[in-house]
Length: 114
Length: 112
Image 1 (tube, helix red, strand yellow):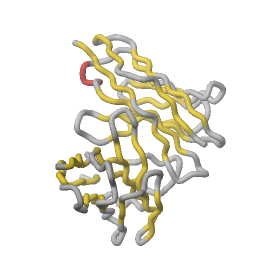
Image 2: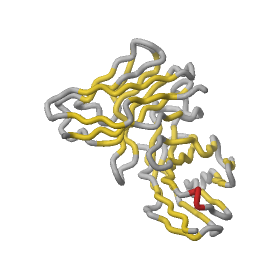
Image 3: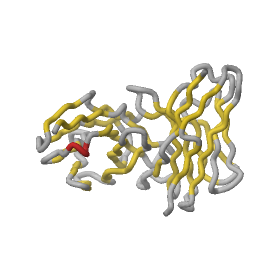
Image 4: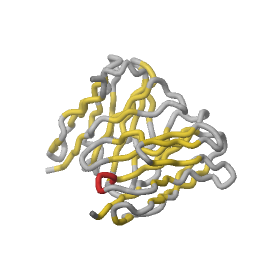
């Protein structure tokens, strides 16, 4: 079945460490997105990519980095510069960046700081 | 800028009750509107969408009508079930922007 796979489901980080969250899709979608979800705050866009080797900052990009070397993959690195990284992270994709096209979501990664 | 406001939760109803979750939006253009649902521990799933004024989106007994005159997209269901317990997000997407704007979500509890 086609879909979006995020791994791991749970991730723990020590302070000062970088961690990378994986997102893979087999939907042949051009556009991919990373969101952060905190209780009571909805979803906030971190980064998005419309095409391979290109990506743009979202509303809360500070302390995060991404790469898009393959169409299927859009990993997110949470760096030590992100002071409050504990959150639920959601990856999404869509056919193109088009207002009529819905986004498809993975099941998320919950990141906690030890 | 564009924004979405939806009613705060949690909303608690008994099974078979009528559901309304209010959503209003602010947009300078002509956005597409969406409702997404998130079950515990999962990502978001598209529930329904409407792309122009007076369109009605529907799915799984849920409905929402795109009302340009009141800038609203309220979610309704005539008879809710325990399995409808989840968090519901209203969202909009504007052709002039690359992003989808999400509301803060409304948690729904259905009691048997």
